[in-house]
Length: 171
Image: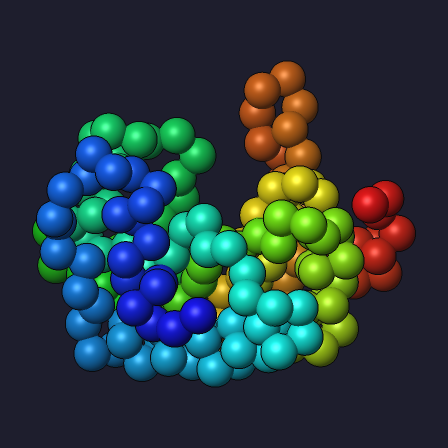
């Protein structure tokens, strides 16, 4: 997996999107390089190439998604927009770094998340469940924050947990 995969992810997930420009600015490109080198390459060596379910999101792609697929989005927090600037001229996400959502279809994602928690310098990781993609960001904060997102009555409820709690979740 490389940067081009992170940039072109939307073409497979949203075939109706067309040819909207998803080119990152220079700062975003560097953040994507660091995400690949520090998260995706080590995971690929350990587990094989993951399936990318969400990657880099430019300002133009974000506008499209907000209009046509607005469900469960938090671009000001999730680092998918990396260092991009919105139409207002301000950064979409004020957190530095970049993020992606990945899945290993034949693996328990709790085990993948635990591997990340134990071995990689991530910033934030959102764990949605064993059969769902895991969101991983890489940024200079290296906060190593793990957020469990449980669905209760149709709403996602976030709860910050530690690595030990993550490892105690069932597969």
